[in-house]
Amino acid sequence: MKPRFLLPGFLSLLLLTGCVPLRTYTDYETTTTTVESSLSDRAVPREKPLPVHLVRVAIAVRQPSARLLVPSGASVTGVSSLNARTVEQGGHKYYSFDLTVHDLQGPAVFRSNENGDMQVNGNRYRGTLEVLDDHDGYVTVINELPMADYLMGVLAGEIPSSWPMEALKAQAVAARTFAVYKQMEARRKNLPFDLENTTQYQMYLGSRLVNQNISQAVLETRGEIMTYQDQPIMAVFHSNCGGETTGAEEVWGRPMPYLRPVDCSFDRKGKHYKWQAEMGIAEAARKLRAAHIPLYDISHIDSIRRGDGGRVLSLVLNDGNGRSQKIKGAAFRMALGPDVIRSTRFDVKLEGPKMVFTGTGWGHGVGMCQDGACGMAKAGYGAFDILRHYYYGIILDKMNSD
Ligand SMILES: [Zn+2]
Image 1 (cartoon, rainbow, N blue to C red):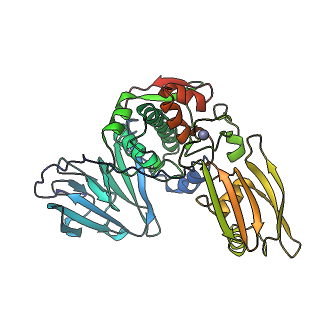
Image 2 (image 1 turned 90 degrees about the vertical axis):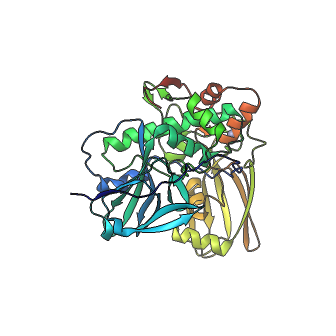
Image 3 (image 1 turned 60 degrees about the horizontal axis):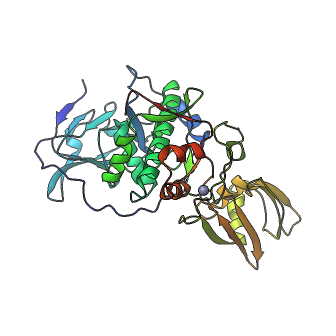
């Protein structure tokens, strides 16, 4: 029998209203390939299928321990109350749990109540939190919550909530479609969660930054997803395409009919349109070696091959020992750091001991350009116009859920 108890005490409702700071949105690196393979050995059977309107998001994956802050009155199963420590925060009483695999008696499940949200790593979460034994001494924390609440957290993590409503709505539909696509994939494989809260999927920071604009965008598009040939699409997006988006095949080697290159003249005023970067040659060579590209140093660069949209497809690096290496543009960017080399739309030159880069765009460039969506909304386009521009041939469908 698993322990189950209610944390004692009553708290006044925590109000999550107020001024929300403008966020700097992050590079977005959704990939189609990397994560599922590493998860396949962690599949767990479920007793019954979970409804589509509930999303399972991993918010801490394979950690040695997890620290949760749970408001009084929350229900807890699968862990002893002896693990709890009382703490005060903002005049309210919480219970703090520091959990390792040794504390678990099966999955530990925490369910919040009207006394406030639960917290993990400083972020606030609604719904339930589940701490699972993830083998080899690690735990994974999963937040299970209604789709609408999840999408509000995604919008808060992805774009500034001060953007025009039609851009927020386009982002809400893209995020919902991507979530449903990943959810279907994960559940087919019986994985323990549908998505992670990282840029590899889509950013999700819990409920902390959700405000009125974001709620409105999610609720006004309730249930809307993009489909192509009756299937939800892999609705990837990125911060700024730098003037033209690129096809899925250029990034992931596999064409997708609705992820084609399109012109984007709406992102010029975006914060991430232009970028510059410098890196010492010795440091760059070290990073390339760490990515299994053996170069002693970099003495010159040649044969830069570009796609139609100007992105670097491949380049050849030569070192002083006469070695040369041909590298794909995307691999070069990842090796040097996607936050330094913000896109593959760049020029590079060697200046003394440094490599100097100038470029446009931030992110992989496939699907919806977020700065472009903002520009289109400011120019008077609606959410559906925006989505139809960046995702070729899609139709807007309505699900029977949030
Ligand atoms: Zn763009």
